[in-house]
Length: 450
Ligand code: URA
Image (cartoon, helix red, strand yellow):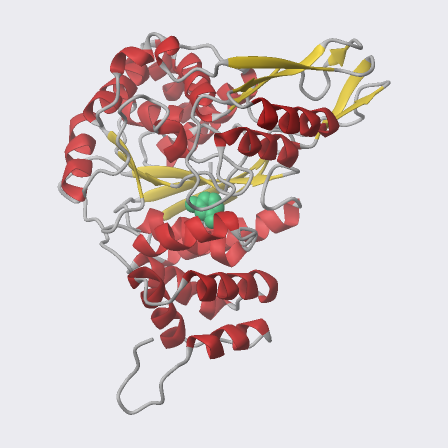
């Protein structure tokens, strides 16, 4: 690590040990650490040890702000002042079957916003927007800044990943966290999300903070803590913020897996698709329009979102973005052009009754086992594999009836995934007493009313 000539050198191992013992790190130490992570000077094993110490010991507000700031300034911060539209984005803390970005970006663009979206890959048991987009043949998520701007100007939305130019520290740490069990920290999640989002040159941001068995924040109070942390971080940087705490106690929609999720988003853009996915897309886009002052209320924003879908304008924006980013636009009309798994296998119910619970993290892990996510940093993704759910919480099922279908390319992996899916379903004699709402609560920025 670098250090001023007059002070003694800071040893990385000492920074790790101090965090391990619950001590506080200075702004300069955090900046140095992030610089060393980005340049590759600090090896992965030391980064991973520090990440684990941070998951276990947490951070105080000054450390958390310093980490977000250092990660944001590890690369370029875009200035989109030349684009005469309100710039609003959305980001999710991660879930299973959580695919709303592919619908929201074109809907918001069709309704008059600009959406410069920088996303992540799959993380732990959750899916990632970049992996889903790469299921579209030819789609390039690695555009240089100049190209990113060109696509954004041409169709109002563009979707890329962290690059060597934008949020490179997150690119490095995100990939390590994915495979070292170091995702579940509000401070690391806040810095990861906010460093990407604040680098985008946006005016406003809607956060979809997930809670439940498939979320990183299983308990609602932990999700609320994370939401508050991110809302405050964004507001301190002058952004309009709202965090919607939404349910992830079972997968969103019916399809899990990269190619399958693109297909399901196309259904929503065509005006159909599963109810929960459609409702959440409308809710989040309503908030995007409201924060961007395109609508006076969230409700009005939702109506505008519906209109962009009904008119086909949102679908047109998506097709255009796909084409401009090198993807096959014909796959938007013919999902058979998206990658398809060779084999399929049903997961039958062992008893008759009503689905009381679906252990959502296990469903996400089953998809990772199939090859839809990474178990090691260098693993490549199989975009074709995944799971199609036939039964969700509250549905009746007969013994022998299929709970879900596994789409696979490797029989060994499929068997492991099937076992996991079987044990993730809890079937009871009666319906669950309480149905969880899709939207739990909203934590919006200071003084904002709807
Ligand atoms: N999404 C991100 O971009 N980062 C995280 O740490 C979690 C979800």
